[in-house]
Image 1 (tube, helix red, strand yellow):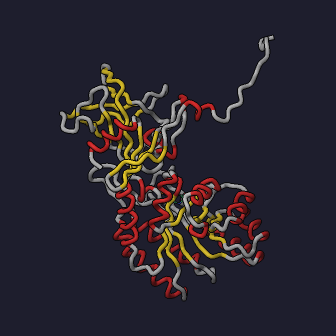
Image 2 (cartoon, helix red, strand yellow):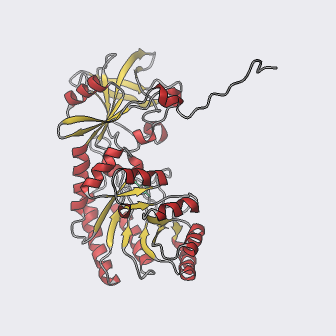
Image 3 (cartoon, protein in one colour):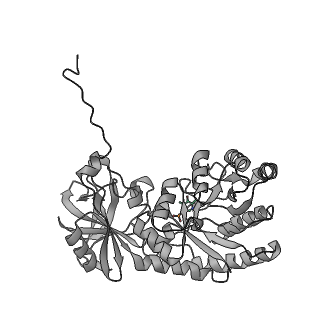
Length: 407
Ligand SMILES: *Cc1c(COP(=O)(O)O)cnc(C)c1O
């Protein structure tokens, strides 16, 4: 997928637009599989919330992956994409007992992350196997917005509550078949991850009928040249060894599960937007594009960096630009960024637009959500149409005020 391919896509399908390179998704999936080759049973569950287009889910179905879901709607999307319920795990936080029961009835693996729901679910459905989400209280990354394993996190059951957890399991006679952790996005330090894994192993020893241990995700991907990324190969080598040792001492070959989102799809995605206006102020040159945080909110919400390339003029002289959107609010994609010279009408390509990009898009400012393209075997396929005016008004019920509403 080169610049010419991307430009052709905007000519044919318009802008702004999301493009996903299936080859990159496949190679990331295989890379993860290879890294954990020594493990007898490996399960990779793709985290649907990163990018939930049905065609992407179908690709993962074909690759043999499972799905990690956080809502009943994500489960339904997975089923719609042809995924067998037995290949789906449901890892919600703060959802109702009713929704959890509904998902369990579909034959999906349930993962419970609080003692209150665990006690209620176990009392009512002691035969349904349940996975338990543990909070190992380990800080991964360091940014509290994306670290969900620390002490004040709302996620998981604290390891300090294991005695209470064991009492609930005994009292209800429920079947715990998995232990899970997800310490949050951006694992930089493999040692920290391995440390958390030891806590998970210690917890796992309390349960006699486990089938799998799920290590969650949080693998870091590079956002720019020279960025540090999780060394999957090193993690694979070290964790595989520890996991195999654990299985030996446990007396059973368990499945090692992961549930990456970002690692599998982030780098596969490009977001393409057209420059509407170049505006020079006393201090800055702004490039204003035909998009905003309604389409790509990560830079504003998380401060994440997306490399931006002017694919209409890739060999031009570099200048400093602030790239901003058309939303009537501050929506800066990048400030003071070195980009090859931009003219009005040029197409800018944003990197790392596969994960948490389209899936977080909205209709703010009553703009349409963009189209999505899958690049597969050298060809562009439309996998979601751009929205239209009907989509904006769908579901609205115009209220009729009668003659004199002010009287
Ligand atoms: C979001 C999420 C993931 C995926 O995280 P990435 O950083 O995108 O890999 C995995 N597991 C759970 C429970 C999640 O909520």
